[in-house]
Length: 128
Length: 164
Image (cartoon, rainbow over all chains, first blue to last red):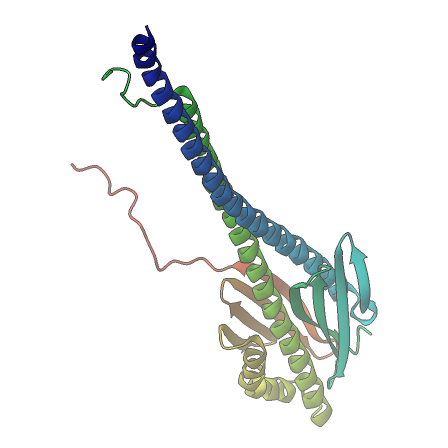
């Protein structure tokens, strides 16, 4: 009776050990995979954020440039738009027949400068 | 014993494998989509930079033409002489605009009677302007057109027609 019990329990122990080993291997594999995937998702999130920042900054710089083109003498200043700061620096240069205005437009996020644009607008003496 | 000792993939392993494959596919798709969006933003920013570089060169060119014409008018009362002086100075004015636009740009200008046409090509953006020079009103902008340069160098044959 005792020998029969011993022989019938042996496979069950083997299966339990195999299950535990399999579970441990699966757990390690899953944790490793998730670690790799988290890095990929993190890189994708950073890339997406940079792209969205650049697109928004480009649109803001374009708006500021058109504002400068419409009224170059009064376009200088700093504007806060959501989390972006649009800084427009204007300098003027007298020419033989009018004034040539230069603008340097910088769009910055709280962390860094995202996009910069240079533009010029000529106003002849007759228009001024 | 041989039957009990065989190793087979259990449902938990199968489920984990499917989950990992799905996660991997989603991660790759997310990364590709994010990179594509970033590339589009970069191209948009580059196009805007090119457009405003051409705009800056054109504005500088108009200022130079206006100044040259006013100076020529002050030196001579003859309108034809002022136009001749402007025609002689036009290559230098175009060169100044070229210097502002940079080495990647291409600036051309020509005068036909009282009409000056100039084009400013900065990589993928092209700005064509037309100026009218008149004795009474000076230099006036009659046309200001920004377009995208089409790359015609690479062609692909889509259909060669019927075989017979």
